[in-house]
Image (cartoon, rainbow, N blue to C red; front, side, top):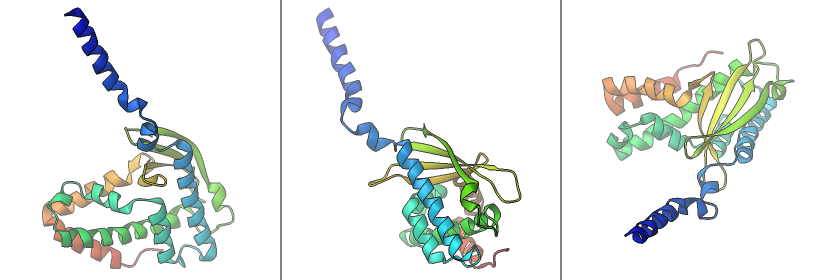
Length: 214
């Protein structure tokens, strides 16, 4: 009986270690810090390049959306923001929601750029600095950075990335401890509870077409 028990314990222990023994298992599950930082740095560099070509007000939104698509997973972010309502939405609602969400996030980024970068681009690259990176959860890496607006105190900006084929993608942006994902989910939930998915679509259409403050 004692021998059988020891064999059983050995088998169970081996099974518990199996995921760690499979080559590449951990590397595929969690992005490396270097890869995550490179994605963030490249995204910021590309945005600054676009800004340098014409400033915030003259940004080509198509080019900016291409940059976002390359460095982020807007589809996953949109689904996470919608939460349980994603399962309740029809195919038509999902398709329109993701299209509107992409443009809403683009509009939000342009507003943030006006605030963080300002009109003087000569030192824009020096206003951004990556500080450190660390794993969060079981699949993500958090890249911690600092942004120094031209006329305000430096801001702590964290980027949450998740592994995808090829390289990691950004799935959340946390400014001074406030998560974009959590904030948008809470904001959208208030509309969804009152007006449902179609009500949220109507709200997003209105927000996207509204003139934005300079």
